[in-house]
Image 1 (cartoon, rainbow, N blue to C red):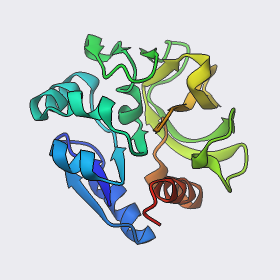
Image 2: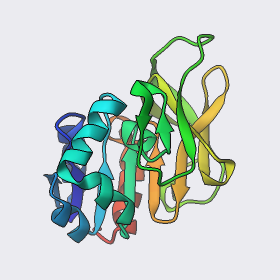
Image 3: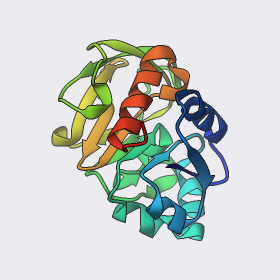
Length: 198
């Protein structure tokens, strides 16, 4: 069973639909007990850092998420909130992976909207069977300026930025795998296999 974290917004249905297509059982939940009991956890992201962190605090998930020991996948905002702090709404985040979430500089158009290549920087269960330079779908105005040791993949948008990060059982991607066609489906399948749900 995969728990999909519900924080009152976001792209929850499309993530669940993607897991349904893979034949993976999942539940959308804000209950700490359900999150801790799951075989894997996905934190999809769409929205703003400040309101999302407020919802996590309201449900108690801000304290629960850092203690998750099963495979955990953050998507887009769900990746950014693993940082220590975000420039968006001047938000204190979960602090699971060292680094800060920063707004794209004014030299580039925001949001980055559309397909972009991801260069793999380290071996990860997420990218098994995917080729280096695979295209994924991005929608974001902020990026996770993570410490180099946590960066598993990068993309270029006027400059190179982290597109995948990893620390222990915590994986995260800036793009939306659920909107990224066969490559995104393969990445989600890899995550579910790591969670022993497939």
